[in-house]
Image (cartoon, rainbow, N blue to C red):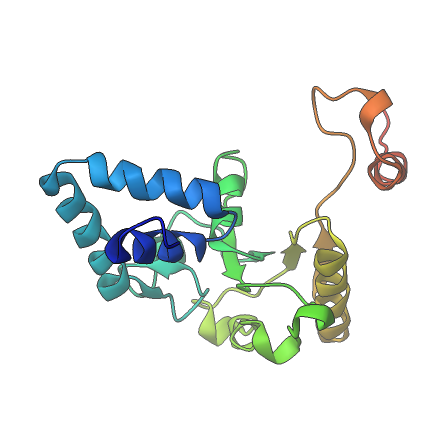
Length: 204
């Protein structure tokens, strides 16, 4: 970093802290910022400050929100008898894009990963259990919990852990189906995906 002046070097170092950003991408971003008008950079900085000051965790579902509880938890149009558990807020967005799920959500903000030191206590799971009681859910009893964690080793471990906790409570616990993505070619599908596709086959 001796080739750059100290402010530029510091900016590159900060960009390198972002996930998925290596040294070359960090350099590109730094020089992109340097080429932008001062007004654009000030708007960018203001947006960073605002998101840190205004965004909080929803005290019901753990979603990132600027109103607490969030709009999903307070919406009268959402079905309160079904809760979908996802790992991250952007997983919620992916499900909402389908426009087919009308229930509530619960965001874990992670998945079990002993290698990375993420255990059950690090997941935002504790506040799920009060939600299962009708008195904490506008008088509605939760009939089903859908576990929509990612189809990874960590996601599977998390799904199995949640199922073991919830099944003794008499609540139906389901897992999202996994298998062949639409538009893919059998030639390029890995064995795990193919196994899931065969397991989750349905009659036509």
